[in-house]
Length: 489
Image (spheres, rainbow, N blue to C red):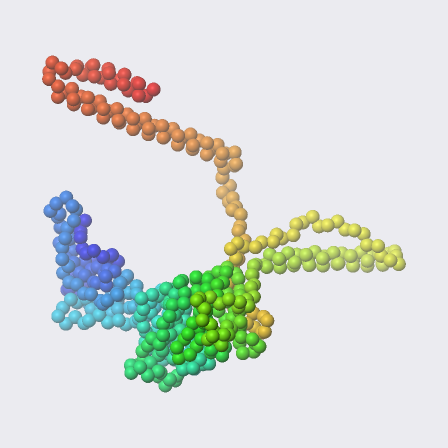
């Protein structure tokens, strides 16, 4: 075993031919962000000095890319005799590396930098061509999608889970972004220039932009999953996986109003638009529940001096949705059968008229009920979580489910040579008998090994006795056989 260094080595390259610097070298990249080259001949002829199986050696060359870099793969430049390599960073980056290991070697250069993993939240400014994103890599990034470049980014100790750009109704909202994190914290971030001056929409210097923290608060114990601003810009609501929704009054400093509990993890928040008479919040849960609550009274909040932020007496309407696909299929089948009956009845009437046998009052004969069963009703459990929702008109809203609700399909038998029920039963019985026989054999082998050990001890003790006290080996063998027969019984 060869001991390199105590980190995870992701990629190993052996160069039998190539440039002068890399011929006969072993190149490794690791999760510590370092690239090292080793002398392969030394490794190939290594000999351990002890029985540990370890051989310790120093690398020939070493270059550390940077802090918080974890390399996962490298690709050599296609240019012949080039010492340039391109490395992928699992933390979201592509690096250009000069591995010539000389005194004129260029420093590592980060060519691209982006989110590591899936983007959890994204929103665009309503008054400029800027876009904000966040992800579990603990960064928030601002992009100019017209210039196709990243303007700035900020890093935090927890990953971002949702993001909402403040609408134009909110005062000084041109560069204000509300970001929720997985530890339950909500941060209000402002896009400013290096001097701390708020960037005005459409007049930002893309080369000098920073994210400044305006305010931070922790309304939830679980990750923040949704943020929404009220239509007039007076209230902000945040939802969480801890089954709570918290309301804040919007101003120069955001003040907590209170919270309500909901039946499940919040997956979406949507305020009613200006066309609605009343300002209400639509709360969507992963359990299939939808709640509608009115906006809290700000005047009542200012006068409230209670000991808890829990809102009491807030009118709430609950909706519990389940799949209606099976009901639709059944209704369609009933309608089809009814149409067939009507068609058959009309044909009979026409036939009677042609024969001139139509009575004054047609007495319709009872038809036998169709013996074919209707499609069964199926309600998946648990139901599909709600993906998103929005108001369409006063009193109506649309919902989108997160996944298709599929009925469980019975397992089919496709192998024509498969066991019948009786054969499967007999096979199980045979397997059980064989398993028990093997267990008995294993037990006997263990007992035999124990007896063999006892016999060996007796022989050793007998040999250590004085000559006049020693037993003849045949006597020991007979006594041991009697002991064995007793043990086997």
